[in-house]
Length: 218
Image (cartoon, rainbow, N blue to C red; front, side):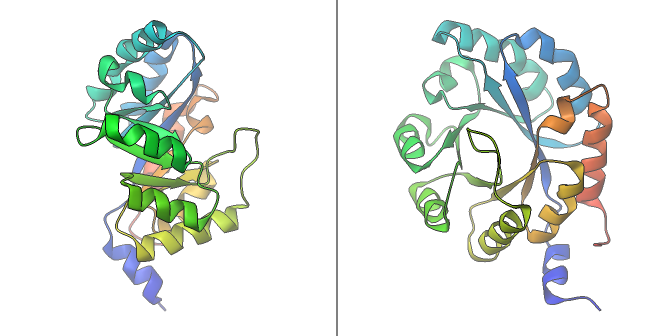
């Protein structure tokens, strides 16, 4: 029997992939793995996590990788560092927490994307959405390591997708989590370590994409 929830999910467009890189200090080393990953599936966005460096170095790193991402019609987002987004030619920034989001919004809007993560409570998510976030992300690892229980992440994604118009990104720590996030109603599914862990990255991306576009729900 098909439940109302399953029917509603089937009526939505399939979620799109959102790739998250490891912290990078040498953008050149990421070019080939990124090209391979982007070549096997539709990817909506790539979030660049940059190793600590001075601003000119950060800008150079972003510019070195931008053609690979934007050439595939994917949005290039930077984790933090909203002050370099325009100079680096990026499409936006991902900010952790409501305060960082609010501080960055005047410099990013209306031309660039402002995404919100690090949202500890439902209230935080609502504040971010009301402030003008272009998306909210649930389930990403905390700065000190660890993340909420996956059941709690699914609950948060389902709650948000039923009540709010701002798109939701659900973070998948493994390929096995992808389909559950789809069923919960995430508009985007973020994937990090499985893409870069070994030479099987493109296969991981292809597998995730297949799970997002499968016609039948488990």
